[in-house]
Image (cartoon, rainbow, N blue to C red; front, side, top):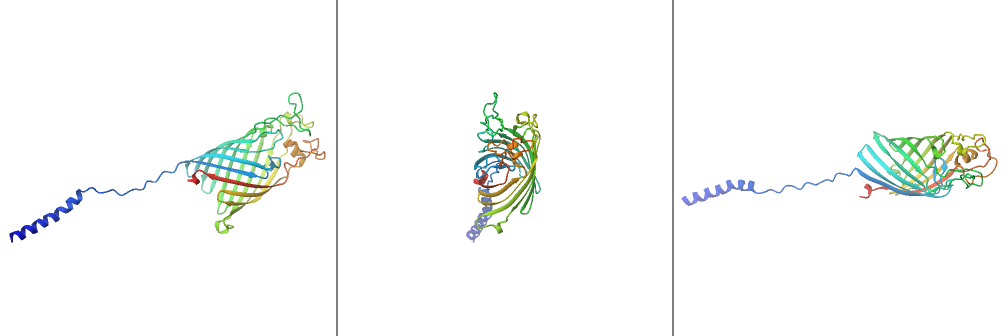
Length: 317
């Protein structure tokens, strides 16, 4: 009997002590997933080839094909505020035979609700230009009598706003330069844009698509005496003009094919006075700014096909 009592007692003692032993044993902590904080930095970059480089209704490539590329570092302070700087380049055909257009730009992009803003500074640099006048100071000459400064570089400040509602985006843009294309004339450009982006259910197979258009007005001041004509020896009072474009685009992954019609209401004579087109010809396009009558089609209707690729470093991760 004593042996039985001792056995029962020993068993109770072990069972009572077991929880204490278990509590003293080390316990493995559960693994916690470490989520990397997204970098506020990103880089956008891309390239394009186009049948005509048209800017505000005026060809920048003499109605010939052009190539372009850009590189744009960005810093996101938060989801509603981004700062950026950029470098881009385009092949061109200017009256002064500049080698290319090189753009340096930067600004900020705040977003408030459905409205995205963009405020910045843009410098257009045209290296390698030649002065064309035909005098002792500038012996080179354009056969049709037009003149061009060696340097057409200039800057603009700008503000943009885009209001997005559903599949539609409505935009307003404003650009100002105190010395447009280094002509001595101030320039102010304002435009409105409208874009419809088709939802996924309306995609054409793997292709997304959109329709967009823009209507703008370019106001221009008076040039310096370099571009003077007999009626205005102290400088040409350049004609303001309207411009518009409309087109459709197709997207596939990072690629976009944009097909667009562009035009202005500037006549051929005033276009020649504004652009100094070395290919301008004829004598019937006489205006106060263009007494020789040569006419330029650099401001006329044109169709542009543009294939571009645009992506960001973040999208590649």
